[in-house]
Length: 137
Image 1: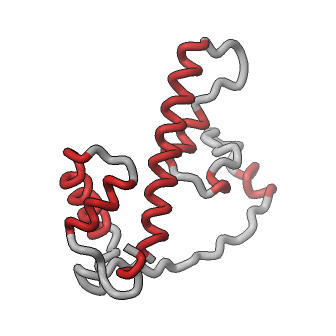
Image 2: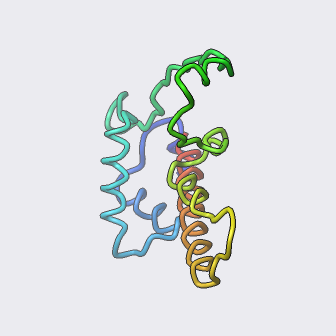
């Protein structure tokens, strides 16, 4: 796979072998490859040709610093703050899971275990995808 880094995307069979290496069940590799290719197409990773996976350019927009006085002009707000979680640069799904942690009161063991399993599974999938994308570039 590393030899194709600068040239072109690997053929479907090689891509499916890499997907198996990421932990996808062998029977699901064809479907996983199709989903990956469709996602890459929608995100414009194939802008330079179907055989080249290139991260699209992103315009960085500088936001002006917030003025604390402006927040109180319209009589407060409707809440919905992010508690600083969006600044972490995490996937929105992981942020949503973090927001589900109760801030007070009891957290029953069964619900806590389910949350940890869900979070761990999503972190694993997210990091595996990132590693794979880094290897391609």
